[in-house]
Length: 564
Image (cartoon, rainbow, N blue to C red; front, side):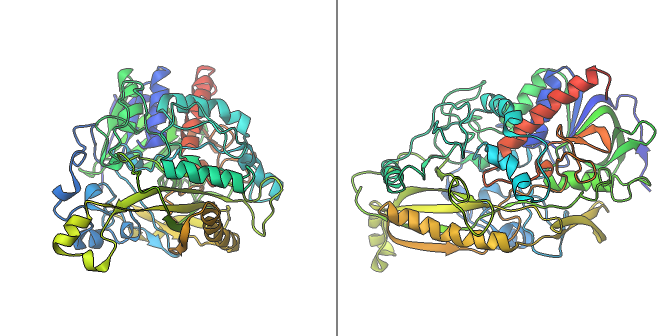
């Protein structure tokens, strides 16, 4: 029997659950507005610079040359399904033995249980949703309508971009709105030429430009610009990409208002049925198995999409046996992701006198062109492409793969290649669900999640175009020997899981309102991917930043008015 400890100093103005992109932003904004905040993280602490143990290693300094070992494959049966498993990030993914989950249907769940979460490990692609993304559900009678529109979030996109530091070019496209960018990284000569050919061939209806990313091209808020090492997810000692450690945590700490507590698994939100508000949270110390309670006026749930929903579900009471926020029957439903793992690539002739310099940490982007304007397909929504052009080394001839000949060939540059990888929207379906398992528990005796999610017909139809259009675009740009690929996407492989606690206009059909408040407990806010009502086809992290900053602004205003 675990003992609960009540401590007088466990009282705060606000509790933030989770320390990833959304949690870091929540902590920063709450602290800067003068609130005393505790940020609870279930995993270990990772300190900026000091704990980036692989940041300055060359690949040949890893025992297995930065490959995956048999032990790593054994330890990570889920993460091994994707590109994410290698020596450089060994120890950065959640322990799958300690933290299992149930796959009633396949779901590849990639988790980072440490301070900073996946903000240390993300791909940093940073895009705004467009106006149609917030309108499509209503217009197409899919799921429910977003409770906000683009104009509601646009100022908060700007606010987030200005602090985070987003490099990108201004293109003037409705389908991918411009932001408040710092100077863009450059496309290489091949990418520039192919971009011009694409623009001409498609009469200015398809566009290719540098991928917008949270990488600095100039010093910004005491952070140094990118050194073109492309070792971002080893942790950047320069602070040249946005993470909790490099950006939001220092800002929060500078106020003197933040307490950070690692190894703190939030097991439930405490609820007072008389006031209809949360009073705080219960945590389990991951190291000692001791239970504590922390009290607060407001709670921000930013534990990463599925874990945020897990906390809500595990906060079940006699009022809501399925969890806090479950009164609509939508908690745990409407799982979203981005389907990917398909595209095309080929060879680019010429340009032998040119090579790339450094390791640019972003590629190119081609925004959505399907089902917009006059285009109409036999499926809903659309997709975009990420990719790039580059040159490898020589050794392209079979006889030159060993010995002296190999070494000599490696001093020569190979031919240029160009590749595109598609990212497509996934529609929200009520029957794509997660729930608490009644049989399986984790290391700490807590119930784990059971995934019951599948790809449906709309996504399968879209996927055909995702492959074929990539080939068509490359061939139109003059790329030779274009081949297509499809590595069979399953849910979770986009690493952009969203939904399960969606925003809406009606408490009967949604978990949260338009200010990210839980309908059932108005001082509880959910601002990470769990809140998403639809997914668009662009990387969602910037939207989490903007929604979090917006929700904090509202929450603090309401707190001052005495409404919370």
